[in-house]
Length: 162
Image (cartoon, rainbow, N blue to C red; front, side):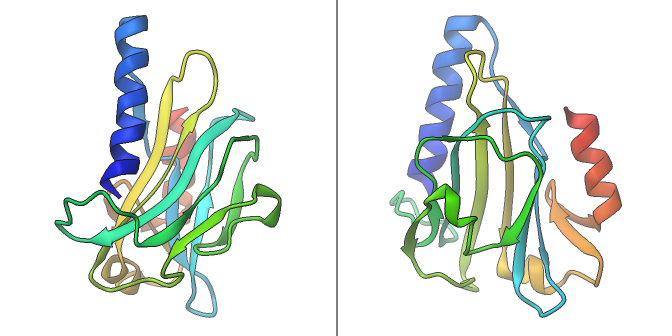
């Protein structure tokens, strides 16, 4: 997981050095439990921005190895607009590459992230969570920005962030 975070951070730093400013970290991604109790992604990129580095990375808390042991990675760039899909099943048209366990692992910390894939790389959308965060959600709640909130609060937060 750290390798992916460092890769995104490296791009952010490099672009920031070249442009004089860095990409903002924005709460444009949330996770929730669907009606059947399965984890689901709520993705809200700004407008119809092109995305890159879309990935879910999971590893044991405190793991310094940089290995992704549970998740997926989407190659290339995508334009999706708003999207909602099962946590471990991104849209088939994205051609995601699965990595390791394809289920929430209780001892893992997960990061779901993407970056704006434009020349100015203005922002990264991200959410970090654990299986216990999802299990604690009440019906109608999502996990975003490090806390539980209603879907409406998340939609407003994401919209205001853009």
